[in-house]
Image 1 (cartoon, one colour):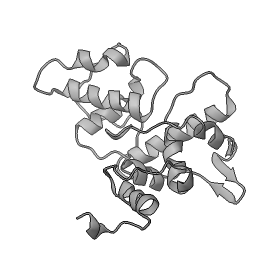
Image 2 (cartoon, one colour):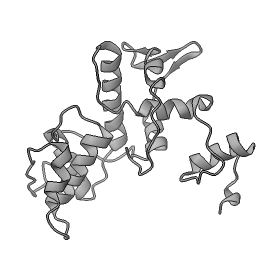
Image 3 (cartoon, rainbow, N blue to C red):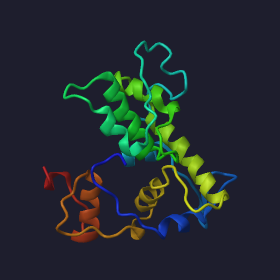
Image 4 (cartoon, rainbow, N blue to C red):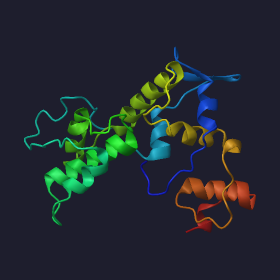
Length: 206
């Protein structure tokens, strides 16, 4: 995920939402019309930048620094790369690569994927990368595979469906607890709307 705050998975919501998914249109077909996640939704819910350089295999063509991709499992990836207190280029790229593979894209392979190395190198160089369309492309791919191929398990950022459904259909989302401390403006709004009975105002919190 892209936050330290975990999301309680709703195991029923994902297959129920996929039932409305059209593989031909890559969108959800509801009785009232068509809906589909957009780059704007990804930016609003995850905070991933919608603009910047596009992700492609040659995006680090002019990068002179070399990165050695370790052939280890994701479980041992970080522990083997952290070698000193002083952060090196190799360690920073390894962190970004681990984050992309395990939490953002959720790859099916147990090892890090080499195709994401250029993205990690650009993030390490403080280059603004358009991660929102990159993420959305992988989301559409995983949603298509989930709705067309019957497997025991599927990988990819399918967890985004739950966040997206909750944002557009708040009645399906669990009601926040009154004692819960809001971490985002969205949680403040949900807390005021569904618990306190009125929409929260900015001045009430600051």
